[in-house]
Image (cartoon, rainbow, N blue to C red):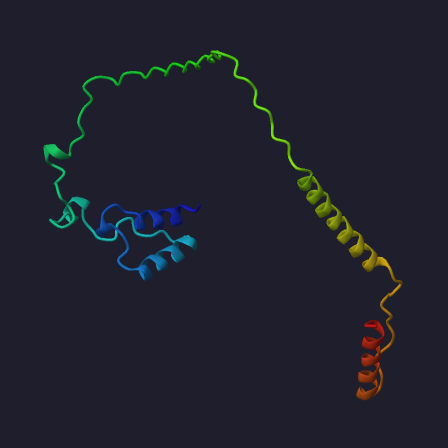
Amino acid sequence: MPETLSAAVGVALATHPRGRYETAKAMADALDAAAQGIAPPTSLIPGATEEWDTAATSVLTSRTEATRAAPRSAPAAQRQPVPARRRAEPVAPAAAAPRERRKRRSPARAITLALIALLVIAGIVIAVVSSSGGNDQVRLHRVTYPTVGQSVDAMKQLVEDNTR
């Protein structure tokens, strides 16, 4: 990215509202100029940024004790890895439970599935036979003639020949 374009974007992203472009048009003009290699101004309003602070834009001034970073009293303790979880041991069955007998399924279910499969296969066979059964090929012939009437008649005949 060109440095001029980076500087223009930096002005648009200024933390203080008075350091940004006043309008979208001003920003667009600055970005266009930056793309052509013309650097934007580093500050849009002359003066130090401390002069920009007003009661509306600054809750606390930078000179108070409340805005200073609190010093660390001690270095942060190093974290220890969490021990792996123990797997629960399988519980031995108290007494072998008698196995339940499975219910026998009726043959009607198997017959129904076989009929459905047979219908699907029959449908596939019918589709294949009907699509490749004949020798019907598209017959093309010349349809350009000196008069419009002859061309229209030839087109009608071509459609009729190929739709039988």
